Image (cartoon, rainbow, N blue to C red; front, top):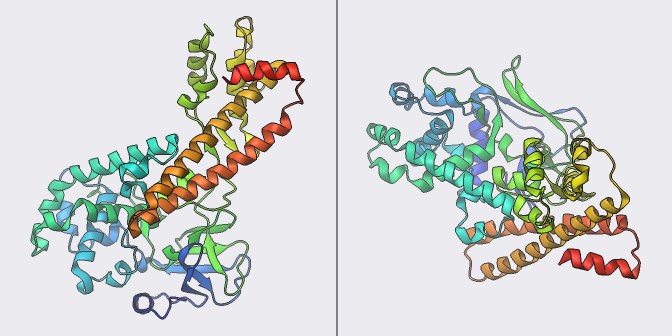
Amino acid sequence: TLSHEAPFVELRKWLKKKGYSSRSLIPASFSDTGRGLMAIKPIKANELVISLPERCLLTTSTVLKSYMGDYIKRWQPPISPLVALCSFLIAERHYGDASEWSPYIKVLPKSYTCPVYFSDDIMDLLPHDVRKKAADQREQFQELYSSSQSFFLSLQPLFSHPVEGLFTQDAFRWAWCSVNTRTVYMEHVQSDFLSREKDVFALAPYLDLLNHCPKVQVEAGFNKLTRCYEIRSIQGCRKFQQAFICYGPHDNQRLLLEYGFVAPGNLHSVVYIDLGTLKLCLNEGDRQLHQKLLFLKDNDFLRNLTFGVDGPSWRLMTVLKLLSLKPEQYASWKSVLLGAAVSQDTEECCLHKAKILCQHLRDDNTNALERLAQLKDGADQARLEQLGVVEGLRREERAVLERSKEVLQSLLPQLLPWQHDGIRNMER
C-alpha cells in the first residue's frame, strides 16, 4: 500500500476538504502495473466505485477562473483547451506548495513513456505502422509548442522568473502527456475565450490512479444530477485486488500511442500490415496491379489489414484474393470485396501469401528485439522504462504472430511433394 506515504496522505486530506473521501479504494503499488488502486472491501457488481465531486475536477473552467484566466481571455487568437490546461499545470508545478493544486501535482508522474519522449533509436524499434503514427504525433506536439510561444511570453507578469526557463519544451511535454494520458472524457460548454477545438478534458485526482484492463467492464461519466464524475463497476472486485477500469476496446499500438503502456494478453491485440509489407507478395508482372491497388484504396481496403490471434483478418484475406484475380476476372472485383467465393486454388494461394507476410513480420519482430536488448546495455532508468514499453509491445506482437502462424498452418492443406516446389518459388 502507498496510502501512508506523504504525497498520498496529503492528496487524501486535500480531497476530503473538497468533499471526497474514498471508503473502498486505497493507493497501492502492484508488480505488474505499478501504482494503482486496491479494494479494501469487496465491491459488488453494479456498485459505485468512485463518485468524484465536480469541484475536485481540473478543467478549462478551473483555469479560466484562476489567476491565468484574464491572460487567456485577452489573448488573440484564442488558445486551445489543451494549451490552457497544459499552461496551468506548468504554472502550478512551478508554484510548488503555494499552488492550490499542489497535492495533486505532486502525485503526477515526473515523466512518461509516451512516444514523444522517445529518442530516434527507440522510435526505430517500433513496428512501421505505429512508428509513422508516433512520428506524426511528435510533429504535432512540436508544432503546438512552437505556436504557443507568444502566449507563454504574455504570462510573464505572473512569474518572477523568466518564462523562457519555465515553459520549456520538456515542461510542456510533461504537461501535454499529463493531459493526454490522464484526463477523463467530459463534454463542456464551449467557451468564447478558447478556440473551437472540442473541450472534453477533465483531470480527475485519485480516480486517475485506476489502471486499464481490457477485460473489465465499467460505466463511467459525469452525473449531471449529483454533479459528480462516477465510475460504476459492472463485474465487481474482490477485497485486496486491484480495481481496474477500461479505456475502451483498444489494441496495444493505440494504448502505447495514447497512454504510453501496453496491456499483456490484450484480447484486442492485432499486428498491422502496411502497404510496403503487402508489396512483398504482389505480382509485379500483373498489368492490372496498379488498377487493383487504386480500386482497393477507393473502397477503403488498404488500411486495417491485420493478423490477430484468430489468424489473418477477413479484410487482409479479401485484399489478397482480389490481388490474386486473373485479368479475365475483372468483373468479379466488386463481388470479391463483398465476400464472394474464389476458386480453391486462389484460396490456397492467398493463404500462402498470408504465410509469407506473417513470416516477414516475425523476422522483423526478432530483429527489433535483438536491437532492443543491445540498447538496454548502459541505459538509464528513463530509457529502460521506455525500452520496456516497446519490448512489451513487440512481445505481445510476437505472441499474436505465432498464433496466426499456427492458424495458417491448420488452414493450409497437406501439399503433395510436387506442389512444394511451386510454393517455394512463389515465396522467393
